[in-house]
Amino acid sequence: MTRYLLFLLLLSILACRPAVDPTGKDLLIELQTGSCFGYCPVVRLSVYTSGRVEYEGKQFAERQGRASFQLTHSEMRQLRRQMKRTRLCQYPEYIPSEIADAPWSTLSALCNGQMKSVVGSIDRPKALLDLENLLRNFAEAHGYQTRRGVPPTPEE
Image (cartoon, rainbow, N blue to C red):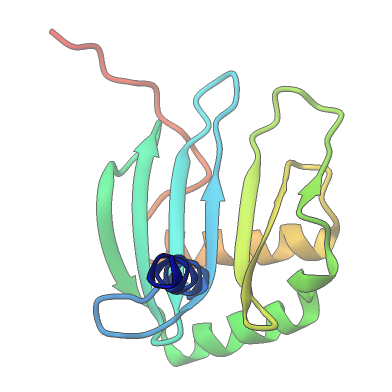
């Protein structure tokens, strides 16, 4: 019984650890976007402390699948400044919206040693929208479209 409890404790500790990229760097921030009634792109951007960004284009994304790119030192400085201004930890986990068709986004970052996620739509505070837009701008500057969705291609 004691071994079983220790095993469960170990699993819970491991589940709370931040994600690590293949080079051994910790996750700094992650953006996941959701769908809408149209062709809103569903993507995930994971930025690690090394500046490595993992992109995953899921649904209606111009670029499907996984890829990665590296942020410059200047971009990393800008991102860290914006994260500090935003203070993600201060927000609730869910920010409701009155607009049914607006795509949702989830921003996740390490807060006080734990991953904190904030889910919301276009009704989020300006600081959250600014942080999301900065992440999208970086992705687009590196060739990854995150704002404009594409309709599915018909299968022949």
